[in-house]
Image (cartoon, rainbow, N blue to C red):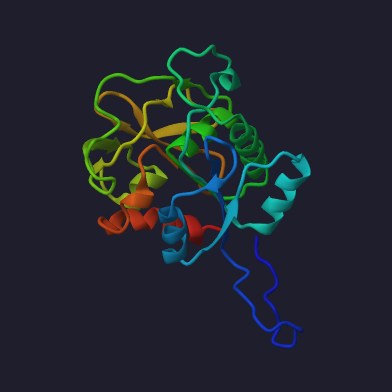
Length: 243
């Protein structure tokens, strides 16, 4: 979605680029008193030449349309577990949830998909994207250690990337090591999605839509990897470029 840039004759003192505005979803603190978003998400979008716009959990459905009319792309950020009732299950391994954020992100994701707005989804965001399209989650995974003790920017386990996917074409490798901070994962894929990457224990580490120009989810935290491993910056750059 491209918008008219401010003309030099417009009666404003300052202007900003009206291209590549990226909405980034936020969470709330446990007490519900503050919104929060780790700064690396914002920095990564800026470095990819996008303009970040933070999107907190919203309650009024009309606001989702207004937000999407104001942005060119949507970044679904990491955070707490989704309520399993949203994919038809009782709680078995779920931890702390954020119902307001669940409602808001599922609504805005479904609308963004209908409008074919580019989406990049990270960790929880990848799970939101899957549930928004009818998929399910593993409430608590076993196998490899998917919540690492190493620093956030240090890759601790390997993934295998499927050839021919957006992820493979961008990262140009069949195998890569990634960081990991999750205890849930995609189980049954949402409608129209494929698994683009998996860990050695079978955990899905990447998904993408077959029906949209750029809708990609990754289970690992590329917002912490792109500076130490510049290859991962390509995901942010390509995402912004497609908006």
